[in-house]
Length: 308
Image (cartoon, rainbow, N blue to C red; front, side, top):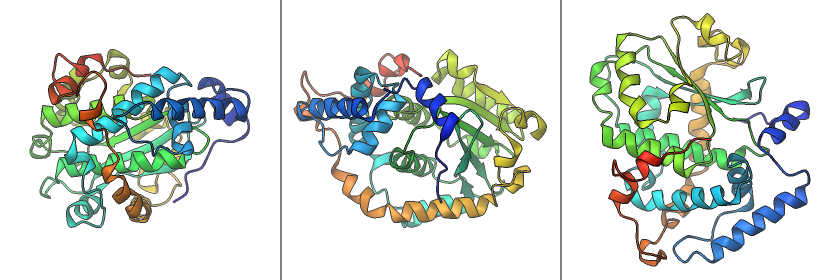
């Protein structure tokens, strides 16, 4: 699976939107500045390569201070949430079972304004609810791969959530604590620019789910959630042709796309194993360690989520 990268006028517009410096040399100076900062942080690993640092810079619109905060959280989360960041091996039976019943591939193409589209859908109503933490783990593994493979930067992410098989039994497995950890991790530790969320095949349950999640989101993100009663309304936001054939498009079968991402996850297995030890050492953090309450308590970081 190859992710199409922006080029030509699209790339130029994205660079302007992301406030990217005009020359490669200026970008490399920013990369060098972040690497120098990392050398002075006794609690953080020093293994962040230039390609991922460039992705962090783009995701933070080249604000060095935002990059520093994101990187600190990126490594902190790996220590704080082992259910998401330990045993990241898609060959494990628990992980393989997720990809058997849930499709979650990023699509290869881009929207006309340079955004990457990802789809999430379950396959059957009557199956046992998958391990939610394991599914979130895989989603974050895909996010780590994209840190490498979004080579020139995209203008943001668009998520399509297919609710056709969602049931109250499935929904009950999404505890507030787990959802909170996942949202903090995605929004605080990854250079993600969430531009749109589209929920298709809606039912009365979808309103319950959206209302459950909304308190965990900033107002800006709440306004970016769109519920669709028909595919035609989705096509006003996401071009039909770039979608999988199941949704009327020409991007191939979603099962095939999902299998290609399964293989990519397998290909990255050695890297994920190397990363097991790549996490913050709270005993060395200047000013003292950060506790779970600091990170996930309702009166702590959670209320201070910021979205670009």
